[in-house]
Picture 1: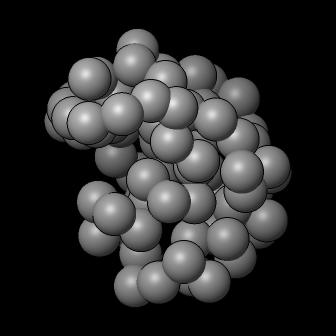
Picture 2 (picture 1 turned 180 degrees about the vertical axis):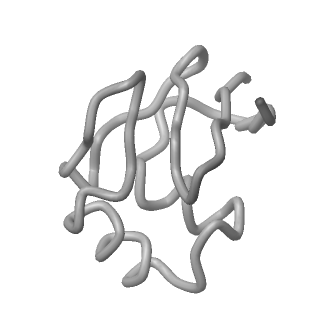
Length: 69
């Protein structure tokens, strides 16, 4: 599992995907979320502005990431 370090929490889910270069743009991040391709803490997440905090686990593109500050 990879670790994503954020400077400030919370961060919105779509912003996290974009900032970590998991997608090409904010629009692509929002599309991936709406298409149910992203999991947060084991649950499919469809809220683009879901607040992500330290300790959350994000699953996307067959990879797992743990968020930390």
